[in-house]
Image 1 (cartoon, helix red, strand yellow):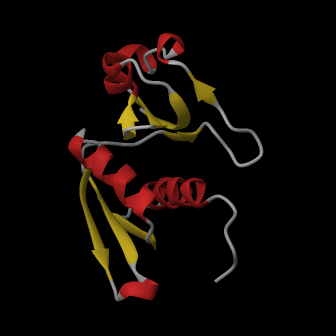
Image 2: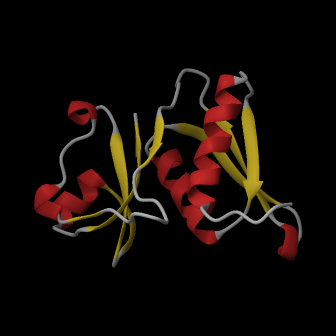
Amino acid sequence: MPYVTDPIGDLLTRMRNAQSARRGSCSAPWSRLKQELCELLKKGGWIADVTVTGASPKQEIVVTFAPDKKLMLKRMSKPGRRLYAASSSLKPVLRGYGIAVLTTSEGLLTDIEARKRRLGGEVLCTIA
């Protein structure tokens, strides 16, 4: 398997491609950050389920899509250009119908939670 320079972007692309191909789920190499991101999406009702399969060095994360949701995933902060935002500059995504995912000092948070806790951080992606 080739080396991936942007693992989060790779996960989002796999999810976009699987939904475009009308698949019910997709898999990607496991990492703790990817698992936290998917758990956050599951908690928000954007995806149906997240499971980790395989033994320790070759674990994979399997994302099962919600049948009624078509995700619009967009990578915001990239390895070549990091995007940081203060809590005061976070704006609602699609007038509140979408979410932005941030890495903060307290872990991964949605833009709504980050505004409530007055925390800023790196804007990983937006989901609508």
